[in-house]
Image 1 (cartoon, rainbow, N blue to C red):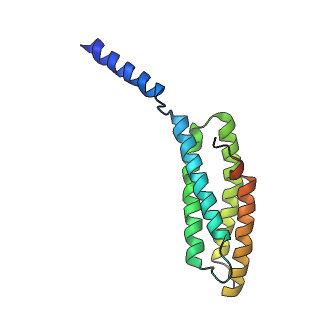
Image 2 (cartoon, rainbow, N blue to C red):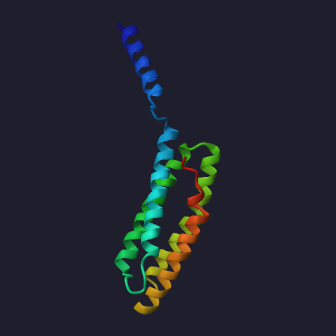
Image 3 (cartoon, one colour):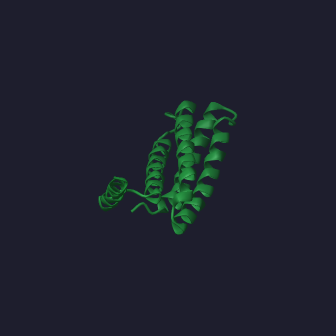
Amino acid sequence: MRFVTTSAVVLASFAAAACGGSSSEDTAKSTVCNARADISKQVDQLTALTPATFTTEAASKGLSAIRSDLKDIKNAQSELSDDRRQQVQQANQEFSGKVQDLVKQVFRSTSAADAKSQMTTAFQGLADTYKQTYARVDCT
């Protein structure tokens, strides 16, 4: 009876693998790529803000979502292959530094008009940093 149970577990494992069962690396890659896609979406929304449409709430919401995505990526990167892990770590370091600077800047500006102008420029810089970092991470 024990042999039958063990055999069933082994066969189920092979079946899952043959049907595209995911390894921890596949799961980590999926986590990274989903977070990367959300970062891209958030960056697009932030860069769409103009001085006329900018609100601290909208900026904070977008930056908070990005920080959450960066945390997800950081937690998943240890399961990635060496090459992908190195690529993701480098992107995470560069991009998260830019995000931290922006978070500080959102609440530090002197006047509302100056803040709106500075932030729309800063969000464009964030988009440029995204293109140089996470946009290059392979999700194929």
